[in-house]
Amino acid sequence: MRVLLLVFWIPAAFSVVPEALAAPYADELGRRSTGLGLLMCALPVGTVAGELFAGARLGPAARERVVLPLLCLTLLPYLGYALRPGLVPSLLLLLLSGAGSAYALGLDQWFVRAVPEELRGRAMTVLSAGLMTVQGIGMTLAGVAGVLCCCAPAVAARATESRDGAARNMTGR
Image (cartoon, rainbow, N blue to C red; front, side, top):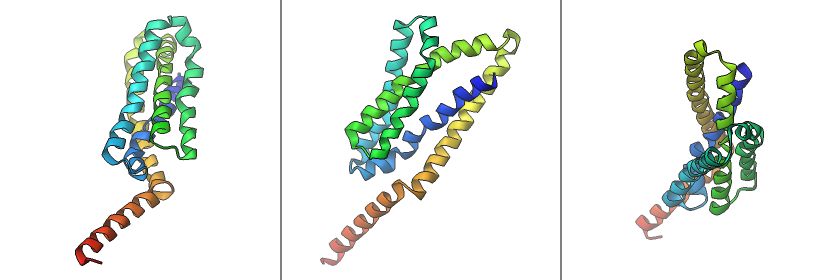
């Protein structure tokens, strides 16, 4: 059961990274609030589409068979960010990653089978608490990483540009 909990929790820690870094990334792309809105929507739209498709088109056995491939599909698109994609490629990566979230449908079946009925309530509590915890940790670590290595220079440069532009407008120089 511990392995199943980790399979639920580890991807969840990474799935919040795009949300944690969406605002500075949208700003870095020069897309500001429109880009931010699109970046914040893409992953959930992919998740809904993937889960609706898997729930409607795949039987229980097929959902279990595709857990690991879909789990990979959830995490691998994030590697595309190493190429510093623009807005449209970023949206496609997030949609793809969200669609892979349908792995949870088959994983739920594994979890229910692995936990004795009399312990399911407790097990679901541990699962839920763990999900919330790792998502918080993932969000925090993504923010720290963004400040230390990725988004901070872009955000700092943007702030300097704005300040310099304001200074020029105020002084007339």
